[in-house]
Image (cartoon, rainbow, N blue to C red; front, side, top):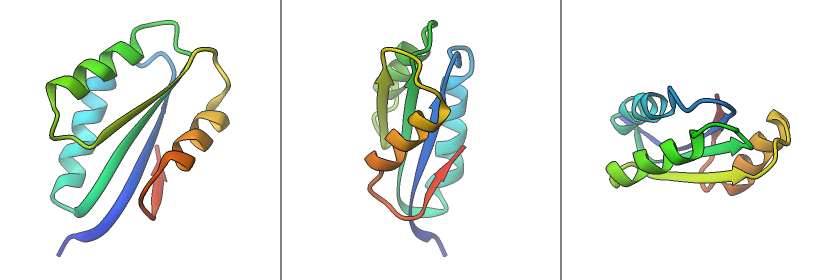
Length: 96
């Protein structure tokens, strides 16, 4: 029996090479276990293409409930987690 809901916050810095795989892995895990869920990617001022790659993944997979928050300047993991938690719609909230 699936759980009701969850928000998953993913703070990112220099994750361009793995962000698509990360999003798809999280989605694969959640889709059969929760009735409602969301994945919130928070790019923390990454100097690489983490944000663009996350946006490409979102566009290629419109069925994934994905939000992307992006900081222009690196503010640290705590600020990224905080932004993701404040943007979350469901309880509980998991960050990885």
